[in-house]
Image (cartoon, rainbow, N blue to C red):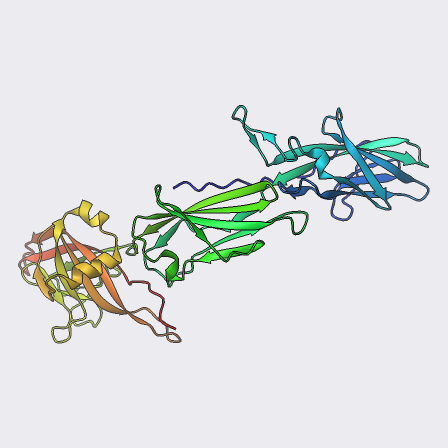
Length: 403
């Protein structure tokens, strides 16, 4: 599902120099002329700031003063209004810049369709007293951006995975404080579900924490949760949307190894594909003649496996759900030894220590392996030599531990 978010474009301040250009003063870039410097201080507002005072910084040398500032559009052809000068600052109201019905409206590539976000080129023509110039001008760009945006999205959730941090975050922005009246959030299941209101969201910034299983309780693998966030200021609204897919908990990256009747490599680690010599305490499976496998410990086997009813590399590639592997293992005939045929697929269960010395952790791991090529050769000194390729992948089910 494509995420629908308006992008926020931040355009750097463009300066038109009437005489010469100085370095930044008070963090704003401006134009210098006749011992004065003028710069647009507020260079970004939200689409809700249709009646907000914008600041222009003024600087002059001794004996020189700025007595007035007129605000024009970027071409200098249309006067937008007069700024009010007070000391080293001039202010004008953004309402002079709104295009239609008290709202911002910028043209788009689609004919007849406008956008409430965009950039406005501004020319500031100012009068000078006491210097060698009577007037000068400075140019700037004012960006009108969204009042709400996502700061962190969650494209997908692993089903029932409450152990992984998945937090959908947003924030709001306005130049004027307290002009956002409310925020509403709804969730829709898939394409045809009803919009369900969600409550308890703060206006300035908040989040949805999917580590709380209640956020997606009752949904299924393959579902898509569509979220809509709407903020309102008077009659103006701003909307952002995002979608979160619920996917199975997958296996890891996978491994490939060859278990053999050769006693120097007749034990196999399913997690890495590594092989070991007979007698080594490493490995999950050991070769069983004539072309099979068995658990490395017959008394208390660490690994058990179940034959699936599907075969082949295509089915193995599509089988990527740890929870389904547990279901198939629990519901099947559990084995500790088997003679293998090419293209068979097994699911297995074993216990692994995935912790550290400081944080010991033992988990039940579920995995699957595909029987690849089985090769029998006849070395002159040792008789038949059997090699069996096994492709494997595994993982544990990520569920938040009880507090």
